[in-house]
Length: 327
Image (cartoon, rainbow, N blue to C red; front, top):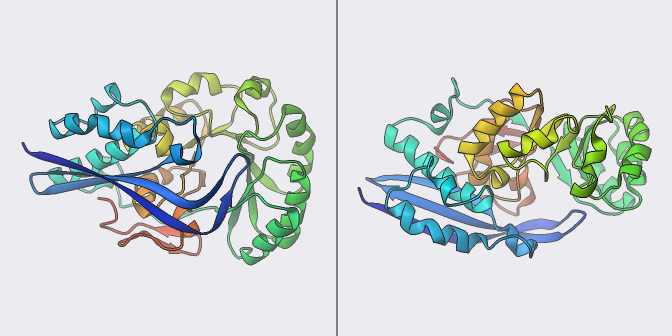
């Protein structure tokens, strides 16, 4: 067996700055891992979160550390022994997953256990955190979309939601506060958000306050994002959250993502499938998970100035599977 693994860093400019409660991005910064064996190829993509978040481990260095092992034949099942859950393992795991499918002569969706090729899904479209007026203007431009995701997490968030609702009266709304609220704010906001037709709130509280969610029984489902990494997270989320957001850059790849989906459903959580900023190569594995999700957030390529080729087919907010993008 002869295996070769290559690692490439890429920068994908955004249409406009992407702003959340704790950072601003001007580009999508990604790493692409390619593994070749016996004439077959597998690829995986992850975001370089360490570029934006200084406390995040060096993703490139982590991937480089397992290159000799991968080239020596390390399997997907053995990979977690050498890389923790997170972005680095995601890129390598997805590359090994696609390689395995190609060597078996099947599609990635078949290897993932799907009975049919992925059906189209509707993704949210994300509005960056800004002033109420600017977010309302952005919502007015995008009010043809079925569902908008609002990045919040600073003072004045109710005014932002009210302004957006007025600009997009018929659009479904979900919120992502990115740990930017206190529990007192959450309690204050909830009845108003119900009246504004918000259908979900993603990760409102920082880790030190999320224990206060126990027994809250909110009128709007609360989704664990930053607090949901992989299956080991689930016991702490029980009784606090009604849903989990599965992101492959958190789970460490499609292998753990599929396992988290199954276990989360067994425990009664609603499922959201999310993404970091990236190209269609990063979205395609998530599209497999999205087949069983209540909310889908794989709009990363819509925020880029251009996508890679070939790419998933985005028709408005509908995401269509395209053979050859990944598997």
